[in-house]
Amino acid sequence: MRQVGTLSQWDDAKGYGFITPANGEAKVFVHIKAFELRVERPRQGEILDFELGRDAQGKRRATRVRAKHRPAPALRNPSGRASLSSLVLVPGFALLFLAGHLMWPMAPGVWGAYMAMSIATFIVYAGDKRAARLGHWRVSERTLHGLALACGWPGALLAQQILRHKSGKSSFRRLFFLTVALNVLGFLVVFTPLHKVLLKPWL
Image (cartoon, rainbow, N blue to C red; front, side, top):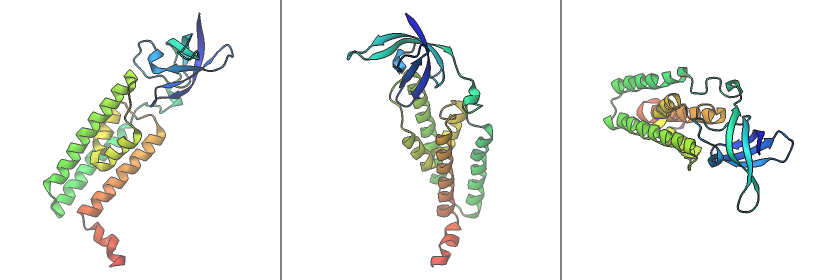
Protein backbone atom coordinates (compact mmCIF):
# COMPACT_ATOMS: atom_id res chain seq x y z
CA MET A 1 0.00 0.00 0.00
CA ARG A 2 1.37 3.39 -0.96
CA GLN A 3 1.52 6.27 1.48
CA VAL A 4 1.86 10.02 1.22
CA GLY A 5 4.24 12.15 3.24
CA THR A 6 6.42 15.26 3.32
CA LEU A 7 10.17 15.24 2.85
CA SER A 8 10.81 16.94 6.19
CA GLN A 9 14.59 16.47 6.25
CA TRP A 10 17.05 16.16 3.37
CA ASP A 11 20.85 16.18 3.18
CA ASP A 12 21.61 16.63 -0.51
CA ALA A 13 25.35 16.12 -0.04
CA LYS A 14 24.83 12.69 1.55
CA GLY A 15 21.80 11.77 -0.51
CA TYR A 16 19.36 10.81 2.20
CA GLY A 17 16.71 12.23 4.52
CA PHE A 18 13.40 11.51 6.24
CA ILE A 19 9.76 11.52 5.19
CA THR A 20 7.04 12.48 7.67
CA PRO A 21 3.95 10.41 6.75
CA ALA A 22 0.66 12.26 6.44
CA ASN A 23 -1.03 9.66 8.71
CA GLY A 24 0.99 10.83 11.71
CA GLU A 25 3.33 7.84 11.94
CA ALA A 26 7.03 8.20 12.80
CA LYS A 27 9.47 9.56 10.24
CA VAL A 28 10.69 7.16 7.58
CA PHE A 29 14.26 7.04 6.26
CA VAL A 30 14.65 7.60 2.50
CA HIS A 31 17.74 7.28 0.31
CA ILE A 32 18.26 8.93 -3.06
CA LYS A 33 18.35 5.49 -4.71
CA ALA A 34 14.79 4.83 -3.53
CA PHE A 35 13.43 7.54 -5.83
CA GLU A 36 12.00 6.47 -9.15
CA LEU A 37 13.33 8.11 -12.33
CA ARG A 38 13.26 11.90 -12.05
CA VAL A 39 15.16 14.89 -13.42
CA GLU A 40 15.49 17.12 -10.36
CA ARG A 41 17.01 16.39 -6.96
CA PRO A 42 14.67 15.90 -3.98
CA ARG A 43 13.81 19.09 -2.12
CA GLN A 44 12.83 19.56 1.51
CA GLY A 45 9.11 20.28 1.81
CA GLU A 46 8.23 18.16 -1.22
CA ILE A 47 5.12 15.97 -1.01
CA LEU A 48 6.01 12.37 -1.83
CA ASP A 49 4.19 9.15 -2.65
CA PHE A 50 6.02 6.04 -1.43
CA GLU A 51 5.86 2.43 -0.31
CA LEU A 52 6.98 1.36 3.15
CA GLY A 53 9.73 -1.23 3.24
CA ARG A 54 12.46 -2.46 5.57
CA ASP A 55 16.23 -2.70 5.28
CA ALA A 56 18.46 -5.67 6.19
CA GLN A 57 18.27 -4.72 9.88
CA GLY A 58 14.49 -4.57 9.81
CA LYS A 59 14.33 -0.77 10.05
CA ARG A 60 11.60 1.08 8.18
CA ARG A 61 12.55 2.88 4.99
CA ALA A 62 10.74 4.35 2.00
CA THR A 63 10.91 2.57 -1.36
CA ARG A 64 9.65 3.35 -4.88
CA VAL A 65 9.36 7.03 -4.02
CA ARG A 66 7.59 9.40 -6.41
CA ALA A 67 6.98 13.14 -6.28
CA LYS A 68 3.41 14.37 -5.88
CA HIS A 69 4.06 18.06 -5.32
CA ARG A 70 7.18 20.20 -5.16
CA PRO A 71 7.38 23.32 -2.97
CA ALA A 72 7.22 26.68 -4.69
CA PRO A 73 10.62 27.95 -5.88
CA ALA A 74 10.14 31.02 -3.68
CA LEU A 75 11.05 28.86 -0.69
CA ARG A 76 14.61 28.89 -2.00
CA ASN A 77 16.57 31.21 -4.21
CA PRO A 78 13.78 32.66 -6.45
CA SER A 79 15.86 32.21 -9.56
CA GLY A 80 17.26 28.85 -8.50
CA ARG A 81 20.58 29.86 -10.00
CA ALA A 82 23.36 32.37 -9.81
CA SER A 83 22.26 35.90 -10.51
CA LEU A 84 23.27 37.09 -13.95
CA SER A 85 24.56 40.28 -12.35
CA SER A 86 27.32 38.32 -10.58
CA LEU A 87 28.78 37.33 -13.95
CA VAL A 88 30.00 40.89 -14.47
CA LEU A 89 32.77 39.97 -12.05
CA VAL A 90 34.44 37.90 -14.77
CA PRO A 91 34.84 40.63 -17.46
CA GLY A 92 35.44 43.13 -14.65
CA PHE A 93 38.40 41.14 -13.39
CA ALA A 94 39.65 40.67 -16.96
CA LEU A 95 39.71 44.46 -17.37
CA LEU A 96 41.46 44.84 -14.01
CA PHE A 97 44.05 42.28 -15.08
CA LEU A 98 44.58 44.02 -18.43
CA ALA A 99 44.99 47.42 -16.75
CA GLY A 100 47.43 45.98 -14.25
CA HIS A 101 49.42 44.25 -16.98
CA LEU A 102 49.71 47.46 -19.00
CA MET A 103 51.01 49.38 -15.98
CA TRP A 104 53.05 46.65 -14.32
CA PRO A 105 53.83 43.88 -16.86
CA MET A 106 53.11 40.41 -15.48
CA ALA A 107 54.28 36.99 -16.55
CA PRO A 108 51.93 35.32 -19.10
CA GLY A 109 51.65 32.40 -16.71
CA VAL A 110 49.47 34.44 -14.35
CA TRP A 111 46.60 34.69 -16.84
CA GLY A 112 47.24 31.11 -17.87
CA ALA A 113 46.84 30.00 -14.25
CA TYR A 114 43.43 31.67 -14.01
CA MET A 115 42.34 30.09 -17.30
CA ALA A 116 43.55 26.61 -16.36
CA MET A 117 42.06 26.70 -12.86
CA SER A 118 38.76 28.07 -14.17
CA ILE A 119 38.45 25.24 -16.70
CA ALA A 120 39.35 22.67 -14.05
CA THR A 121 36.83 24.15 -11.61
CA PHE A 122 34.06 24.14 -14.22
CA ILE A 123 34.77 20.46 -14.90
CA VAL A 124 34.64 19.63 -11.18
CA TYR A 125 31.30 21.46 -10.85
CA ALA A 126 29.95 19.52 -13.82
CA GLY A 127 31.09 16.26 -12.27
CA ASP A 128 29.51 17.14 -8.93
CA LYS A 129 26.28 18.10 -10.67
CA ARG A 130 26.17 14.69 -12.34
CA ALA A 131 26.98 12.93 -9.05
CA ALA A 132 24.16 14.83 -7.34
CA ARG A 133 21.72 13.72 -10.03
CA LEU A 134 22.79 10.07 -9.82
CA GLY A 135 23.19 9.92 -6.06
CA HIS A 136 26.93 9.20 -6.22
CA TRP A 137 29.76 10.44 -4.01
CA ARG A 138 29.82 14.24 -3.98
CA VAL A 139 32.66 16.77 -4.08
CA SER A 140 32.89 18.55 -0.72
CA GLU A 141 32.02 22.23 -0.51
CA ARG A 142 35.45 22.82 1.03
CA THR A 143 37.06 21.51 -2.16
CA LEU A 144 34.87 23.72 -4.35
CA HIS A 145 35.76 26.78 -2.27
CA GLY A 146 39.43 25.82 -2.37
CA LEU A 147 39.36 25.69 -6.16
CA ALA A 148 37.65 29.10 -6.29
CA LEU A 149 40.25 30.59 -3.98
CA ALA A 150 43.05 29.08 -6.08
CA CYS A 151 42.13 31.23 -9.11
CA GLY A 152 39.24 29.06 -10.28
CA TRP A 153 36.40 31.35 -9.25
CA PRO A 154 35.63 32.64 -12.79
CA GLY A 155 34.97 29.05 -13.88
CA ALA A 156 32.91 28.46 -10.74
CA LEU A 157 30.72 31.47 -11.50
CA LEU A 158 30.10 30.26 -15.03
CA ALA A 159 29.31 26.76 -13.77
CA GLN A 160 26.82 28.09 -11.22
CA GLN A 161 25.05 30.01 -13.97
CA ILE A 162 25.20 27.52 -16.84
CA LEU A 163 24.80 24.30 -14.84
CA ARG A 164 22.55 25.81 -12.16
CA HIS A 165 24.61 24.05 -9.53
CA LYS A 166 25.32 25.33 -6.01
CA SER A 167 23.41 28.49 -6.84
CA GLY A 168 20.42 28.17 -4.50
CA LYS A 169 22.26 27.70 -1.21
CA SER A 170 22.79 31.06 0.48
CA SER A 171 25.48 29.89 2.92
CA PHE A 172 27.53 28.42 0.07
CA ARG A 173 27.18 31.57 -2.01
CA ARG A 174 28.29 33.83 0.85
CA LEU A 175 31.44 31.83 1.44
CA PHE A 176 32.05 31.58 -2.30
CA PHE A 177 32.04 35.36 -2.75
CA LEU A 178 34.41 35.64 0.21
CA THR A 179 36.88 33.40 -1.67
CA VAL A 180 36.46 35.64 -4.72
CA ALA A 181 37.24 38.74 -2.67
CA LEU A 182 40.28 37.11 -1.06
CA ASN A 183 41.62 35.93 -4.41
CA VAL A 184 41.24 39.35 -6.03
CA LEU A 185 42.83 41.01 -3.00
CA GLY A 186 45.71 38.55 -3.20
CA PHE A 187 46.13 39.33 -6.89
CA LEU A 188 46.31 43.06 -6.16
CA VAL A 189 48.79 42.60 -3.34
CA VAL A 190 51.12 40.29 -5.26
CA PHE A 191 51.03 41.74 -8.76
CA THR A 192 50.53 45.47 -8.21
CA PRO A 193 52.30 48.09 -6.06
CA LEU A 194 49.48 47.80 -3.55
CA HIS A 195 51.69 45.63 -1.35
CA LYS A 196 54.07 48.57 -0.93
CA VAL A 197 51.22 50.73 0.33
CA LEU A 198 50.08 48.04 2.76
CA LEU A 199 53.58 47.35 4.06
CA LYS A 200 54.69 50.99 4.26
CA PRO A 201 53.60 51.47 7.91
CA TRP A 202 55.87 48.56 8.94
CA LEU A 203 58.89 49.54 6.81
